Length: 541
Image (cartoon, rainbow, N blue to C red; front, side, top):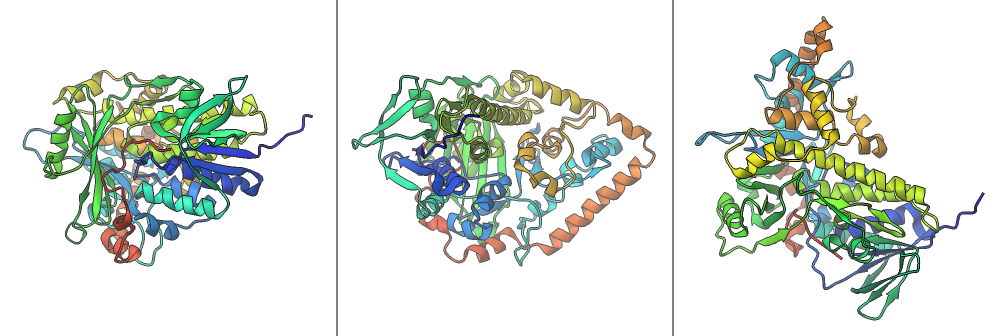
């Protein structure tokens, strides 16, 4: 048996959210046995990966680091997110009121292993009360702008977070450096390769030359190491998701008057959609659009009009991005994490999820000296699955739309290239079958990140989007017709959901009330330099 020689040095090139999440996680996983250095260029502005998240962030990152929610949230101006609210994604006649549906984070009840929406469709044919209000506890809470925690702080429903990504990066930087992670402020001038084509060293503007056993590329869209130095090709998927641009800004909010919505909004526009991410005193917003269907000037005007802004008096960040991923996320002795690895528009807040999943998989596949090909190949397969599965789920928001009022929506409905796994999911759904294995409880969902990783977009996720769009199965699940007690069990479970909704609405404080007391009179946002940019795509190093 060949002896294993542990690696001693990891060099993370690029700071920002991805760099400091990686540094903190690897320090916790391996401690003093591995020397971890973050090389961060102070002159490069860090725009941030995104401010909206998904619920696994606490379990996979902060719980692993030993940092409770109540410790990190106040330092990052964090607010709660219990769902994504989709506004006007269905066809709307001129003058008709807005339509909406929710994608909640709650886990769907199931009866005898069959998700509740299949009984809902069996009973109603999709008519009557929408699937989100019928089958999830959360929608009435969100309509009332209630917090997902009780007044004494107990968790009432699953939730994620809205936060300032700069503040999260700064918090994790302080945490990691205090425990021995080395922080070097310098800028990369050249990446030198060895005779085998692996990275030999990183040369900096100051004259510093840094070498390591393993390099982690967190340089954002510039992808200095894995694409720039190692030449790994990027797989462009612009035929599968059409948006390639964004215009963004931060907008003040009167919390006392308007409250704080405990969800991210995705508001359909003529050539894309606008995000709205509420936090104390302001909300981040930006218009994600396709440059094929709207010019930058038109997008800016439409975005300003949505919120009643004067485009001549507001600073907007304007970004171009490309959808896709590296052919391989790990090449030789270099691992790419964050935007240097892959990017999807932030419709379901995948940016920080991708980072979290990648650092979890990196620790699980952490190499010895030489980076065994089997480890590298396994890591790459996991990242490829994560990205492609999420890309498919985002596509589900577009090709199911009933909108046909603009060229963009007609193209989304008719021209997107769908993967074979996506076509299989559609086939199963239209036949009345579950798309993924049903989950028995929230504990089941959060029991193992490995399980969640392969089943992240659950039946509940797909039912919320498909049924919310009015995209329904062709037939109810056939075996239900042979179960004499199916209707009675379903009606009892649907009634239990209603009782849970009423109890939570009666018990929970408003999100504004909870956050105001939780953060105190001076939220961290007042100290943030990043109010001009929120949630959208960016680079950092």
